[in-house]
Length: 350
Image (cartoon, rainbow, N blue to C red):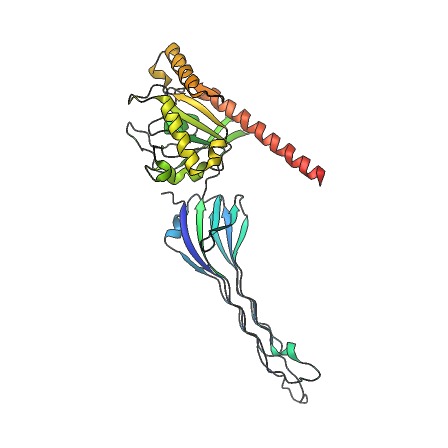
C-alpha cells in the first residue's frame, strides 16, 4: 500500500439542539406550568490512534467529517437526545495541526490515545428553566450553540527508534534487509526507495528495536530537491541516526564531502536533527581489502574530525552488521534507563 503521510481534512462537530417552549396541560391540573425540556448536546469529533494503521491513505478519499447534531427538547420536561461522538481512526504517530492558526493541537503516539479536535455544541435551555414567582408562564428558550469547525493537517511521523541516512545508493535498503525482515526494493540506480520502510531488528528474544529507511538525500533536499526531504519528518522521533556512506564512492566523489552535505541538509530542515546522536557507517567494505577499508575509513574520520562512533560494514555481505546492531540495542537500552531515572527523580521531587 502506498504511504500517504500528510493530508488535510475538515471536521465539523454537531450543533446543540434547541430548547423547547411547552406547558403542562392535563385534566384537573389547569395551572401545570412550563415543562419544555433542554436540547441535546451536539456530537464531538475525536481522533483515535490505532497501531494497526500505517498510512493516511483513507483520507485521500474522504476529507470532510461531520458529527450529528443534538435533538431539540420536548414537552413534559423531556431532554433532546445528544448527538453521538464521531471517532476517526488514525495511525499511531499522527501529529495534528490547526491550519488556521498553525498550532499543533496534539500528537498521538500511543495505541488507543484519543484527541478532541472539534467540540460539539451545547444544547439550548427549555422554558422550564425560566419560571419564577413573577414569570409563571415563561416562553423564552435558548438556541443550541454551533459545533466547532476546523481545518486540520494530519502528518504521520513514523515511530522508529533508529533512522538511516545517506546519499542515494549508499546501501540503506540493503542494510535494512540484512538486519530485519523488511524487504525494500534494491537496485543499482538512485532513488530505488520511494517511500519510508520500517524494519524490526531483533538482536535476541525480547530485545528489539524499530529501524526506518527513508529515500536518499541529495544536495538541496531541504529546498525540495530529490525525495528525501519529503520524509525527513519520519526520523524526527528517532533516538539514534545511522549515517551510511560508501567507503569509496563509485562515482568518484569524496566520502567526507557527502557526509558534510547530508549534515547541511539536516540543519536546514530541522536544527534538532543535527543534535541527535549520529553514528557513521562505512558501507560496501566488501569492495576493498580489510586493510584498505580501514585506511580509507580512518582518513575520512580524520578529515571530518568525527567524534561519534563509526563502523566499517558491508550490508550486502552481512559483514559487521550484527555487531553494529548489538551496539545500537545497548545504546537504546541505556537511553531508556536514563529516561526512567530522570522520570523517577521528577516524581521524587514532587
